Length: 461
Ligand code: NAP
Image (cartoon, rainbow, N blue to C red):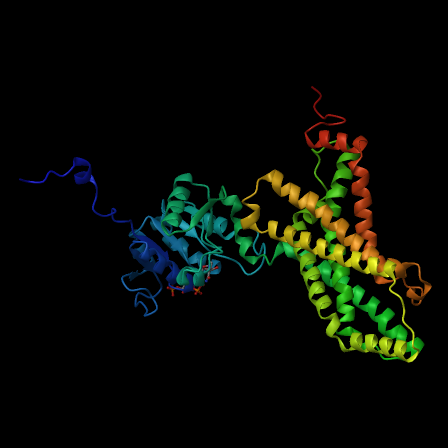
C-alpha cells in the first residue's frame, strides 16, 4: 500500500529559494567582513575590484571581477570604498543606472563635508538608487560575530523600494534595520560613529572641574594651613583623608545637579504659563545627561564607602586612639560616654547607609534592562520620589556630620568655610525650591500646564 503524502507537504519547498547575488565594490577590511557575513547567510557574493587577481584574505567561494563586470551581476551593490575614491564611479554611471548602491562610508571628523557621503554619491550617480546603511557596524564586529552592542543598522534613502530591499538584506544577516527616513538623515547617521560619549562630556568635565577645585581647597585648609601655622607635616592626608572628603562632596553636589534642571524647568514653565515653548538649549542638554550625572555621583559615593571602610586600619587613626587612651590612663581619668555625641555619630552613619542604599537603587533602576521592565509611572516614582529621598538623606548625612564644626571658629581656616559647608549649598537650594514647588498654589497650575493648559493661549478656542 502506497503512502499518501499530504498535499501541503508536497507543496512545501525542501530548501529556501536561492538568494540574489550581492556585489561589493572594494576588497578592503569592510568589504571582506561583509562578504563573509553575506556568504554565511546564503548570498552569492561578487567583488568589484581594481585587481581581479583575488586574495587569500577573501572568503572562499566568491568571484572577483572588474567593477564593470561585477556591477552587471547584482541589483544591490555595496560600495565599500572611501569617499575620496568615489569619482571613479562616474565612469560606470550607465551601468549603475537603476542599481541600488549602498553607501557604508564614514568620515574622520564630524560634519567633515558640506553634504553627507551618501548624498555626494547620489549627486555623482543621479541614475542610481542610493541607500545609506551599515556604517555604524565595524568590520571586526561583523567578522567576529561580536554584534551584541551594535546589532542596529541605521538605514536611510529616498527610494522606498530600494530602502526596503536593503532593510531585508540587513535583516537576513541577523541584524536589526532601523529606518531613519530619507537620505537627508545620512549626515546624522555618518556622525554617529564619530561621537565620543556625547552624554558623558558634561558630567565628566563638571566632576573634573569640581574635583580639582575641592582638591586644592582641602589641600589649602588641611595641609598647607597646618604647615604654615603649626609647622606640622600633614601631607599624608593626600592619600585617604582628602579623597574621602572630595568623594562625598562630589557625590552630593552631582546628585543635586541631577535634580536642579527639573526644578528650573518647572519654574520656567510656571513663569511662561505654557509648556509649548522650548527650553533653552543648555537646559535641554542638561536634562538629557541627568542619568550620566547620577551614575558619576554614584561612583563617587561608592568610592567614599570604600575609603570609609578602611578608616579603622589607618595608622594615623590607630595612633590617635592609642594616644588618647594612654593620656587618659596616665592622668587616671575616665571620660564618661557623651550620649549626644554618640547620637550624632550613629545618626550620621545611619543616614549615610540609607542614603547610599537608595542611591544604589536609583543606579540599578537606571539600567536599561531594569528600566525597560517597569512602566513610566513606576520609573518616575523611583527616579523622582526615591531620588529626592536620597538627596534628603545624603544632605542630612552631611549636615549631621559637619554640623558640630560649622559653628566652631577653628573650622574656618584662613576664613575659609569647611568644604562640607560649600557642598551643602546646591543640595539645600534644590530641596528648598522643590519644597516651595510642592505647595498647592504652585503645584496645581504646574500640573495644569503640564497637561496642556496655557495662561495666554496662542490659539484661543
Ligand atoms: P580599506 O580597507 O582601505 O578598503 C578600501 C578599499 O577600497 C580597498 O581595499 C580597495 O579595494 C578600494 N580602493 C582603494 N583605493 C581605491 C581607488 N583609488 N579607487 C577605487 N577603489 C579603491 O577600507 P575599509 O576599512 O574596508 O573601509 C571601506 C569603507 O567602509 C570606508 O568608507 C569606511 O568608512 C567604511 N566603514 C568601514 C568600517 C570598518 O570597520 N573598517 C566600518 C564601517 C564603515 P580594491 O583593492 O579591491 O579595489
